[in-house]
Length: 358
Image 1 (cartoon, one colour):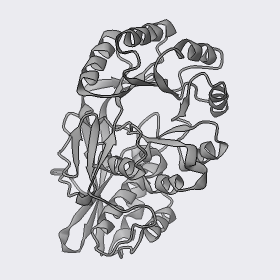
Image 2 (image 1 turned 90 degrees about the vertical axis):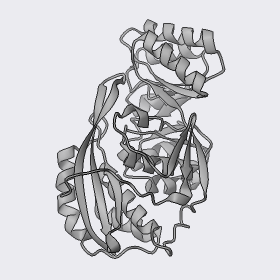
Image 3 (image 1 turned 90 degrees about the horizontal axis):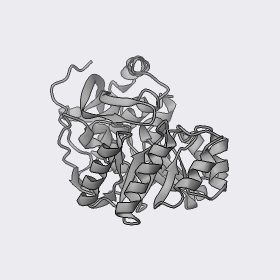
Image 4 (image 1 turned 60 degrees about the horizontal axis):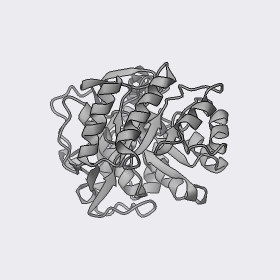
C-alpha cells in the first residue's frame, strides 16, 4: 500500500550554458515527488516544466500537487497498467505533473511481484539505446571543436542547433562539417521554428546537399511544416508541433510528417506514447524521444521509454552530462554513443540526497 506522497524542490546548475535558437539555459529547476510504501520503501518521480516549452509553471505544479496529495494517503496499489493509467488519467494533471506521478506510481507498482505490464511491455535484462548527441547554437569554432570531440567518441548521429540571424553563417558551418566528415555522420538540424514562410523552402534547398537525416521544426506553424514535408526536399521532423499526445495523434493520422521528436515531460509520461506506438496508424512513423534537460530521476524514465520503444533509432537523450551535480543511476550505464538500460534493475533505488520534503 502507498502510505503518502511528498515533494521537494531542487535546482541543478549547468556545467556550461546551453544555447538553443531562441534561448539560453544555464540551470534546471525540478520538483521530486516521493511515494512512501509500507516498510518505508520510497519511489520517486520528477516534475520539470521548462519555460518556453511547457504551458504550466512551477507554481501551477506545486498548487496541483498540494491538491492531490491527500488522494495518496493509504492508496491501494494496482494490479496492472490499465488500472494505473486509468487512475492517473482521472487526476486530470498538467503534463509535467502527470509525468512525475506516472513515473513514481509505475516504479512503486513494479516493486510488486504480481504487477502485470503485459499490456504494453515486458522488462528484459539489458537494452542498448543509440543516442544522438546535441550541440547548442554556440559560435562556429566551439561547434566544430565539440563536433570533433563527439566524432572521436563514436557518435554516428549528431544534432546541431541552427537558426542564426544570418543564414550564411549556418551554411558556412555546414560546409565546413561536410568538408571534414562528408557522409560519415548523420546530422539532425534543429531550428526551433526560427525560419518562416518566405525563406524556408530556399534554405531547405541550400542544405539538401549535406548528409541530413531530418530538419527538426524549421517553422512553428503546423500547416506550413506539412507543406515543407510535401516538397520532399529533405525529411522534416515535428517537435514543438508535437506538444501533447493529442497533437502527436493528429500528426500520425495525417501521415505527412514521418519523424516526430517527443518530449515525454510535455506529453505526460511514457505510457501514452507506448500505447500510441502500438496503434495501427503509427506503423510508418518514427518516434524519437528527446529530453528537456531533466535531472537524473526524470532522465531514468526517458531512458526506460526509449528502451521499450526499441525502434533502433538514435534518441535525443545525451544530455545528463550538462548538469553540474548529477547523481549516479544504478539502472543506467553510459557507453557512448549508447546508453545501456538495465531493465532487470527496475524499479531503481534512487538517493536524491538531503531534501526538504513537504
